[in-house]
Image (tube, rainbow, N blue to C red; front, side):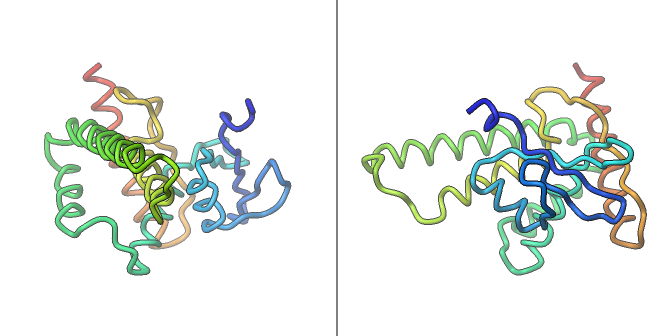
Length: 182
């Protein structure tokens, strides 16, 4: 049981393949999304450098779901997030998002309890896992308030990696600002 509390360690090799250290096999982003949906915490690290790449991959999972039409984030929310990276509001965004998702989760739990607890709402667990993955992506998987360390720089391999680099740079700047507020 203690192992369930420990994050599932996924190692990224130089070939960019992802290796599940528990089952000793390679996994895909969809496999990782499945682990998260089932309630499992994951940590993705670069084998060579030891950099924590979890945030980068969680953001990539979210982006892939959004690009397939599984829209959870309305365009106006995405616009507000982009604006938040360029304004003084950045210090408030993670706390607001965390509080909002906590309230949503509590509301869902109350609804489930009022329905007798035995009834399952279709898709509720998947939605909760997606919310948690989103929150971890937005807050770097850290307990609010505060942050652990700036995001690690990913390897560059074209336009997609440069976009991720820019996102990670912005997230690192946000974490630095939050650290200074403590």
